[in-house]
Length: 330
Image (cartoon, rainbow, N blue to C red):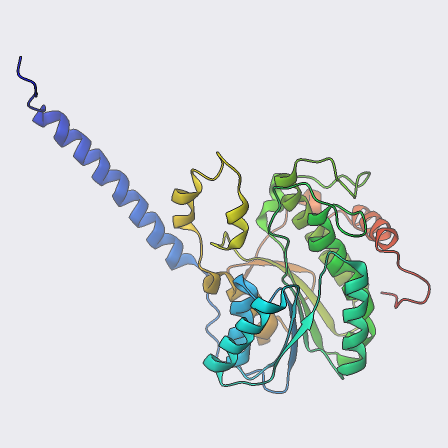
């Protein structure tokens, strides 16, 4: 037998056809994802509006800030890492021509930092037209505690925004009509929030991101209920699966399939569209307590809309962030 073999042409043809078929399906699926991706196409201006965005130095937060700056809004970028925040601000100013972009230091995982930030905002700002809770903890696959002894993912993604909202509520009420936008996630569907263990330091780290998003939705629903009649709207959203920094921390071997899966993710610009819709659109100016995906209202699962559980989360969260009688009440 020769040292080589002539391949079976029929087999090659079959394999080629299968490969072509798979690639065609993938291509068509990606086209479908792009075609159904919600886009906020309104040219509405935001001149004279002040928008506070947490985590605005990268990802969808940065894209949200960039778009709002082009619409004329005054932007407060609340960021933990000042170096990247300064670079992001300079870039946004250059691209938008809007110099009303300001950076404030905020580490949502630290209650001290949240209180100092809120105190600064309450003293320096006369109003907040839109508060966007966008920041999220990216390194969710490591077990880490905050300086307050709280599991880091929950500290950053839930307890920080919970405390910040309380501390800014009087300014928000004075600014009414205004909006609160909470970036949650469809990942809430993959978990349940254990109301008897709201500082889950012994839980599998990656799972805690889902839990924190579950808490975001419950917090938003209860916040909307408590603010009914104040002319402050509260809405939540799923931005989509975004090709952002969070995936850099996926450990081996889970990171292997990510190279393929990420090909179906949204860009950060696409992921910012629903945040922009809820921040700007006249269509939702009087709507509160709803959940959105691709700029459309989306149904929540029955198990996450139970009011009695919302109240428990609220009361226990107040204890964990150490709210006092001197702090504003919602």
